[in-house]
Image (tube, rainbow, N blue to C red):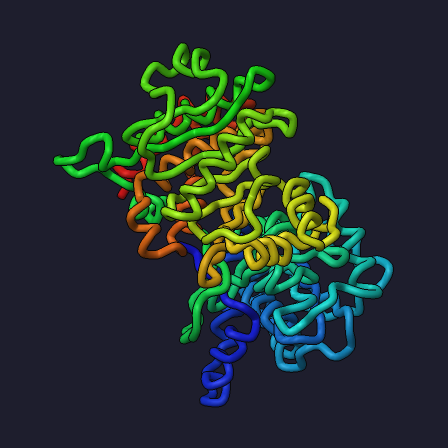
Length: 493
């Protein structure tokens, strides 16, 4: 699991070490230089003769870049630091010059100089900055951001300069990084959209911080998902493995019912009960599904249910009574979102995309649009959780989940090809199966619903990649890939 910590938590962990004289900057700079040297060897076979440009601001990030540049210069690299401000780290600048590097003001030729480098280190702003890049720094970054595929590799020092450190906002110009080498702990902005797509690959360097408090945002990996997965014991039967009720689809949108039930069956739930008007089509494609009412441990509501579908809406409203009275976990998707009661528990997982989340919030007096949600997704997902009480999973290239007790996850496992019709129906069925399989545990710990939602997002993305690596996928193909994807995750554990 990758855990992230806020800027205030990181600074609080640094303070006693700095007061004791621990050389944190030396540790960070050496680790940064070592990683850059590795990139140079991968790209051109050696460090000697490579051209490295440092973008240096006035803070400690600039100092990290300068000391790293000094290490690289001693290895034979040609290192030039472009100083955006006169107030750069004096010790770092002296070390670079002593090692044979140069420090020059960032003037008009700066973008051209940086574009011709093998590697550019972005050390303009660190975790103490806010509000984005301004002035000459913003102009330089704008120019460099136009680099083509043959341009330099960009390594962000701790964070890409100008991102929202704790919330992932992008208030202005940011130089997209190929790699971010972050010190002590990942920062939330490296995991959260829209900034996450600008961070590239994230590598955490241990510099000896003792971080206190709860992490801000977590990202599950395969081992975490395997630990969460409801693997049946030898004595299991279909009822102990979970029964999932699905209210989805209609004659107008029958595919949503087929996809949601197919995903649930192939995820491995004990039984799927379907309620709706297209049971004949569902059974024709998934004969394991049982049609009609009966005992269930969890629900999926809403895929393929339109506002004019009175019969399905009545079924959802009736089923919500069990969700509220008996605490049955539920996935509330698409057409069911507008039927959500004013308050529910965290055992109810909402799965909107940005437009649906904007409508949900607007119905509750917060007038936002899709673009606003996409610009500050963490803020609005947290508000939706606060207003409804539900666990909220915001679908997107990077999926955000917020649940009980502040549990927050960010998953970026899906290929862009997964943005296709029906993919959300598959996710709903997959997540519903997980909720059914661990319904008793969710009753005891409602925050578990958020972890299971994040796990579903990881499996969903990996199944899409397995369905057709590097190419287009269909929602049905993703569902069909679920059993092997899950088996691989469990075998790896």
